[in-house]
Image (cartoon, rainbow, N blue to C red):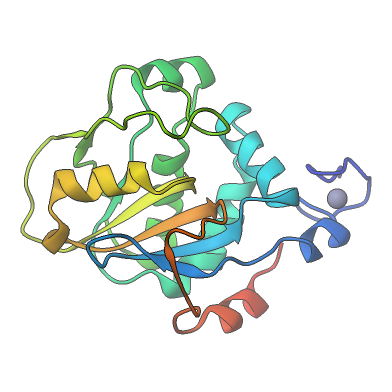
Length: 204
Ligand SMILES: [Zn+2]
C-alpha cells in the first residue's frame, strides 16, 4: 500500500513509519470564554497533507486515525460537528467535521447532534485570508445538554468561536479538532489527561 503522504510503497495503513513518526502532537488550547480545545496534531508536515486529502479528496483514513487518537480525551456529551458550507460539501462530496464526529461517536458512544446549520457558502479560509469576518452559524435547535464541538482544522480559532457563540458558551464543554495551526495568540496548555497513553495505543 502506498503512503498517502510520501507515496512510498509498503506502508501498512494510511502512512508509512517515517511519516507517522513526523506527525507532531499539538498542545491543547483555550478559546476566549474558557472553552478548552483538544487537538490531535499540528497542522504541518504529513498531518497537513492528510488533512488536505480528507477535505478535498474524500480520503477518510486520516479521520479514523484522529478519532482513534482523540477518543480517550473527548469529554462526555453530544458531539456537534461544525458543518461545512453546502457549496463546499457539494463540490468536494464530503463534510470532514461530520465524518470525524461520526467516527468519534463510534469510539466514545456519545451521540452526534447536528445542531449547527450549514451556511450556503463560506469564503475559503484554510490557507486563505484569515482576517476575513466569520459568519455566526445558525442553530437548528437549542439543547440543554453540554456539548462537544468537533472540527477538522483550526486556523485562527474564529470559526470555533463563532460556533461557541451560536450555541452559548455555557453549553459548550470542549472542542476537539484534528489539526491546528500553531497560533501564539491562543493560550497553550500542557496536554490534558491520557493523551500520551492514547497515542501509544494508537496504531497508524
Ligand atoms: Zn510516508
